[in-house]
Image (cartoon, rainbow, N blue to C red; front, top):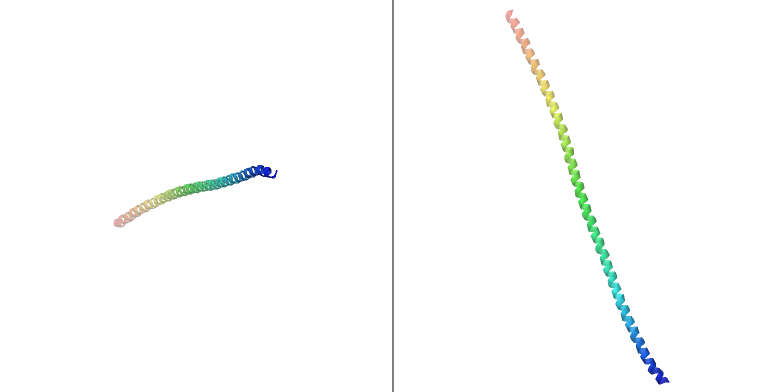
Length: 125
């Protein structure tokens, strides 16, 4: 029975060893595939994060440019308003100067008439 039991056990042992070897190879391949999948998922996450970061940076640049243009426009509008105010003030001052010049001319004319009148009185005397 010893010879018979060893001849029965040998194929079972060989089958067990082959099954164990196949299981180890399958486990190794599954492990490698799983690691590769994790690595690809990690790379995908990193790529998505980089893409989002680039979009945020681009949006920030656009916002900054928009803010810059808005400030420039606001400054130009403020300059125009100040210029208009200064032009109005200059116009008012010119009008006042012209008014004063007109008064002076009238006073000169009045003085000239008085001088002429006095000269005529003097000539008559």
